[in-house]
Amino acid sequence: MDRPFLLNEEPEFLFITAEEEGSRIDKLLAERFPHYSRTYFQNLIEMGSVLLNGEPVKKRIIPEEGDEIEICFLAAPDTSLIPQSIPLEILYEDDHLLAINKPPGMVTHPAPGHWTGTFVNALLGHCKEIAPGSDPLRPGIVHRLDKDTSGVLLAAKTLAAHQKLIELFTTRQMEKLYLAVCSGRPQNGIISAPIARHPVNRKEMAVLPDGREAVTEVKVAAFDEKTSLVLLKPRTGRTHQIRVHLKHIGCPVLGDPVYGKKNSYDSKGPNRQLLHAYRLEFVHPLTGAPMRLIAPIPEDMKIWMRRLCGPALCATTLINT
Image (cartoon, rainbow, N blue to C red):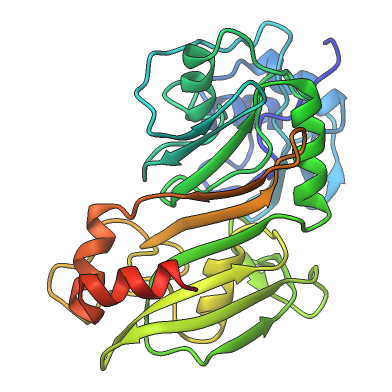
């Protein structure tokens, strides 16, 4: 294979079942992921991108029931992106960058299980030229939002903008404000709790003593007996940070299928996590102009906000925060 590129920043984890015991690891993986060939997994194994219980393996290895397999998917040389004409709600655009209001349900970039219909596909369909960056499968991408999180999503159109925007995110010069509806009533203040991958549920993150520093500022804008509207400013950028932190303090995001709990507030709960990237503030990396990008709040969140504080109070609270 030519120089490989990650398809997912996070590896895939699976556990061997009793029915799969006795099969070679390359055959087993091809059956688990029919989109890929057995040869593809043999190549991953040869490059050390498949681990068995944390150790590199050979393709002839036969795993046992309960063994953990970690897969780092890599792009084959023939992997390509498809420009698609997908409507985008554009918040701002110039020659250097583009910002949209990402709808819930849109994946940021192609990955196993989501090869089309992503923001990258839409970006390529919208722009004639996009900076490739370091990964050809993520042209223009400088940060991500979870699939079911809505709000401000920023992309670079030129290589210079891409490099400088990455630097702004890395050095914490991007001020992010999120809006969430959560269970319970959090205390105003700072959540400082390190985050790492969950030791058992490997697709999830968790607060763990040996995790990476994670800090989130929390402010309650409105609340009732069981639910709160909260404003959140993540000072770090860990995977699932806001969702994990709110779960950690016992106030998970309403509708969160991974870190949440069944909604007891209403018989008809939300069908996605009520988390919205409301505002992004930074200095334009090439013009030096102050940027303040605000994403209109989606209708499903507005319904819950009206229950909590009414439309006038919500608007005033958010804009003046």
